[in-house]
Image (cartoon, rainbow, N blue to C red; front, side, top):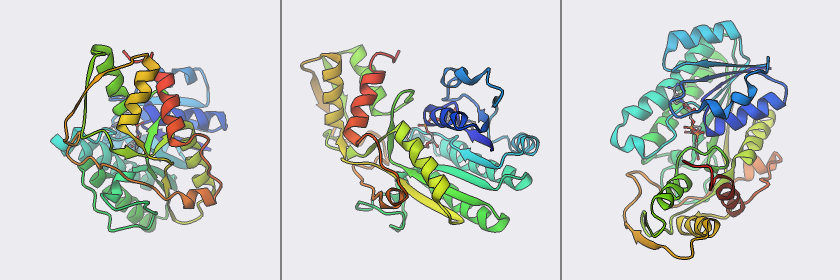
Length: 313
Ligand code: NAD
C-alpha cells in the first residue's frame, strides 16, 4: 500500500516506519524535524520504497498537494507535540502541533484519495477517571492542554470520517518506551545522574505509577488493530501491566549505572500542571483481537534502560 507517516522521524514514528517498510509498503515520511531526527530513519534513505519530505504539517496547502500527488491510501498521523509538560505553559504548542496538524491531515485526505487514518492518541484523554478504563469509559475530561488537543483531534477525525466517508483507527497509547525515546522520565533521570550521580530531584513522592509498553509491542498493537478493527471508527487502548512507579524506574537506572546510593529530594509537587498521578488501562478489546505484549511493563522499562543508558548525550 502507499502510506504516509507524519511524525515518522520521531521515537514511535520511526519504529512504525521500520515495520511498514519491512512489510513491503511504499512509505512517505512527513516531518519538520522539530523533535524528530534524521538518524532515526536514515537507514532507509537508499530504499526506493521510502521517501522523506521535510515539512511543517500545519502548512495546509502544501500538505494537500503532497497528498494529491502521492495518492496514499492511508495516513498514520503521529506528528504532534509529545511533551505534555511543555504546553502547560503555552497552550498554543498543542493547538498548533497536535490539533492544527490533525485538521491539516484531514483536509489533505478530503482533497485526495486517502480514506484511512490511524491516529496516535493518548491515555490522557480519560483525565482522572478511576481505572482500569475501557474505550467506552467517560466522561472524557482531560486535565492537560495536550489531552484536550488529542481529544479534539479525535472528535474531528470522527466528524470527518462520517462526513467524507473515511475510516479511522484511534489508538490511546499508555506510556511508551524503547530505543530512540526522546523525552520523559527515563531521559530526564539519566541526564540528571550524568550531571550529578550523588543527588537527584524526584517529582511528588515517586510513587506515581503508570503502565509502560515497549515500542515494538506498540507497533504490533497498531498493526493488529488496523488489520482487525472493522468499524468506521475503531478506538483501542494500547496499554500494559503492571504499573511501574517512578521510584522503581530510578532504582533500575541506579542498578544499571552501578550507583549504590543517591540522595533523593522529593518535591511533593506534580512534575507539571496536568500530570496524572496514576492510571490503568483495560486492554481487553485489543487482546480479544490477538494482541499480547511480549514484554510486561517492568520488562519494558528495564529493557529500555539497558538499551539507552549509555547512548544519551
Ligand atoms: P516524538 O517527539 O519523538 O515524535 C513526534 C514527531 O512529530 C517528531 O518527529 C516531530 O519532529 C514531529 N512533528 C511535531 N510537530 C510537527 C509539525 N508541525 N509538522 C511536522 N512534524 C512535526 O514523540 P513520540 O513519543 O514518538 O510520539 C509520537 C506520537 O505518539 C505523538 O502524537 C504523541 O503525542 C503520541 N503519544 C506518545 C506517547 C509516548 O509515551 N511517547 C504516549 C501517548 C501518545
